[in-house]
Length: 206
Image 1: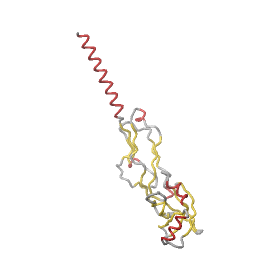
Image 2: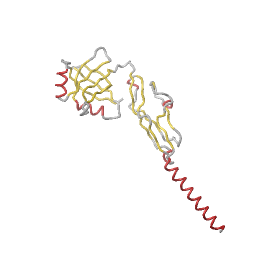
Image 3: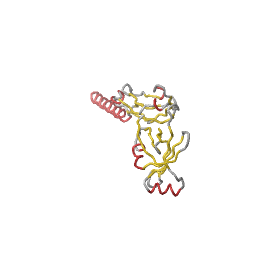
Image 4: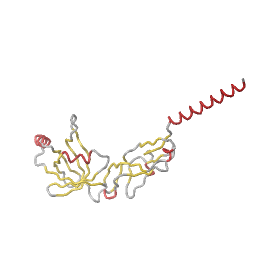
C-alpha cells in the first residue's frame, strides 16, 4: 500500500471551544483509535488533500508527541456548506492484526470485445479486502484483454495471495456488452439493402 507521513499535535483540551479555535486556525480535529488507547490530536487541514481527493488508499505514518503510529483514514466529517474537513477518525494499524479496507479496481489492456464494437462497463470501482496491511496491494489490476462481447469478470475470478475478498463472489466487476447503437445501425443498413433489392426485383418483373 502507498504511504504518506503526517505530524499531528496532541489536544490538551477537548471541549467545543477548543475545537472551534483549532478549526479557525486551519486545523482538523482527529481521533486515533484501535490501539491501547484513544488519542485526540489535530492535523493541518491542507494535509488531507492527498489522502481524500484520490481513489488511492494510503497508509498514514502518524507522529504524535514523538510517538509513531501506522493508521488508516476511516471516516471524515465535512462542513455542510463549505465542505471543509471538520473531523477525521483514524484506525491504528497493527502489524499482526488484519484490517478491512476498500481498494480501487484498475482495468488494464484493451478488450477484444471493445475493439469489435462492444461497450466496456466497470460496475465495481472498489473491492473490500481483509488481511494484514503488509499483504494488501496498492490497487487491484485486472487484465481485460481477453474479454469478448458478452464476457465479464466476477469477484470470484480475482485471486490475491494471503488476502480475503469480502464482496459477493458472484458480483460482476466489469463486462463487455453489445453496443446497441451499432447493432441497430447495422440492422437498419441490412433492412435498407433488402428493400433496395426487393425494389429492383419488382422493377425487373415489370
